[in-house]
Amino acid sequence: LYRSRLAPPLRRLLFRLGEAWPSLSKVAVIRLPLRAGASAERMARRMPLLSRLRLFEDADAWRRIGFNVSEAGVAHVGGVDIELAGADCRDPAGWEFRSREGSGSRLKVDGISTRMSRFDAMSQTWTWEAGEAEHSNAAVGLYSVLVTAGDLQRTVQAMSESIFGPPARLLEKSPFSPKLSMAFFEAGSPGGTVVVEVLAPRTPGQVATLPGFPPIGGDPDAPARLAGLVVTVPSLEPVGELLGEDALGYPRPAAQGQGRVLAPLKHARVGLRSMMAFMTPPDREELEARAKAGTFGKGLAAHLSTGNTL
Image: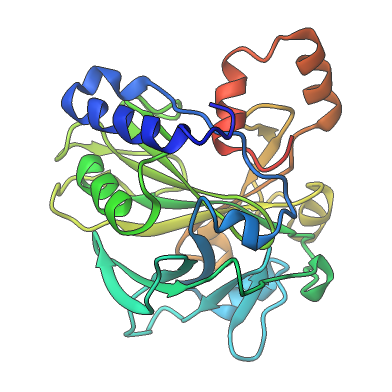
């Protein structure tokens, strides 16, 4: 659906149908993403704006992997403030959003501490310049925030009702493991669209494993948690030279396609508790060639529902 005014009602309808008939959960309702650098005011008309993440991570560990972290323990990535609260912090990990409906309230969304602040696109502005926080690993933005859950339906319902509205995409079977299901939500930021990827066992109570992740699932009543980040870099060369093969996994074509290349961080070796990966943007020349040839195929759905640029 191409930015149509009918898109939100149709997405809500398909989402409800997917709840009633699980076999329809493979249907992907697609929206063309906003270009990277699109104004926050424009994004706020259709999605919440991610403004802050609070993670139980050590600030010095982030400095060692090339992030510019302030003395207060905050890294600015793509206009999003990432607060590194340390492993011993008693305050809950969580996130903050700005939206037209925000009231400044704090709530738990399936266990994740959430704050929704008001952002009036008609009277407020929110800008960010890429040069404000240069990182030696060349990070320029967030591609996605990874969330793990014990029960996908419960988490999707909570996030849909409290933050995002219906998911942009549902996958009954994840491409990473046949035991996992996934849901994709969209958030805005000054640096572009940020995807929220929720991973959960296909059957609540089962346990699924992925390289670099702790076991996912097991307890269907366990709350959702912020599990990791995928960071956008123009090239993998700077982070590769900085970290070396002892800390950075072998680069590989990303599942998102479009010429992206991803390298997972060996997070335990560098002192991180959460998963992290670095990924390049789409190859513009490849996208243009495929668009002219009309050969997007399955890759089009992945790009339109989760990509940052076209």
